[in-house]
Length: 229
View 1 (cartoon, helix red, strand yellow):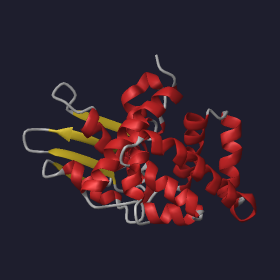
View 2: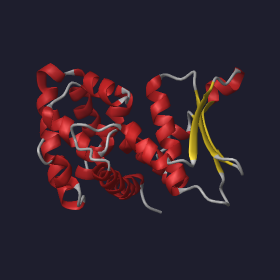
View 3: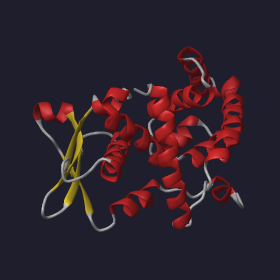
């Protein structure tokens, strides 16, 4: 069985190539990215999104689900969650729709646990989480904001992704792309997020430059997304 790091890297390449091609088709680039345009493109006329205020134990347990019947395919998210988690949940369910949904598996039900799973033994959930993070911040856009040295709080606000999710993205990227140990990746991400004015900004920019060298070689759409920016 592939390790978490190997599967993260493999699926990240796959979903980012899809997202990059879709961005070009929608005339988006690294400066005008909008994840809701990607949502709309994936959904077309076939998928509807609805919020629902789950009650009792379900409110604490359920993050979202995707279900298909003879009428439509519906993504339902827990409307009591904060907007960062709602964005991640919808993106997670859309990855299920793109890659895992079929007649044998016409539904997925996700909890706070599955939205934090990166265990290769739960392959579809690992892929859905990697894909959700990529929808909110595709690699070319991620590299752009890193190289620009944008403040983490501004990245969070601009792209609707929590700083906790941003930290995880930084750690996983350093582990998958540069074979960094968890301890080293954790230390660097802490400095980027919490010592931004001291050493964090320079570390962020250096990471962006080094990551660009790797992604530009494997993503055939990368250069086109960065033109005229």
